[in-house]
Amino acid sequence: MEREYVMQVAETIRQQLLGTTPMNVICSWGALHGFKATTFKDMAALKFYVKGRLFKGYVLIAYNEMDYYEIYLQNESGTKCIHEECYFDQLGEVIDVAIERGEDAEEYERFCEEEHAKLMRGEIG
Image (cartoon, rainbow, N blue to C red; front, top):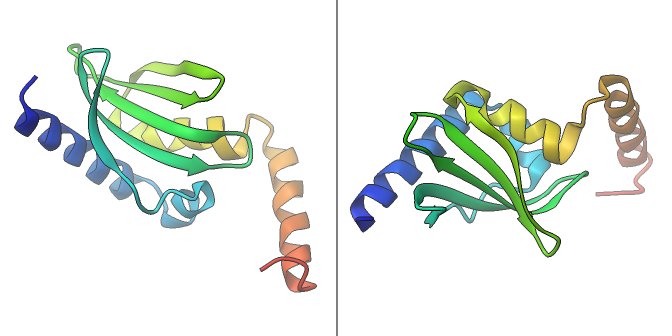
């Protein structure tokens, strides 16, 4: 696969992710820097490290031949596909559920309230 193509696809993925996902969500992943162009399973991809509440490791977003994105989580436990047919405007939502927010909205809201209270008391910062 040509390097220029991989770089172009990775940059497109990065722009789409950053353009459709609120910055506070991306910040909650700890993923502001370190975006890298790569290949994964013979697909051009974007790779970046996250430190989410539910997952710490790498996120790989690969562009497949069917014009979809495949999203993988990778750490010392291995590599897991979390979505095989993702549209560009779903990237942030799919990733956020997998690494930070989870499926239980009420539980996440309680977590955020507890963290906010700790911050206001000066316990974290």
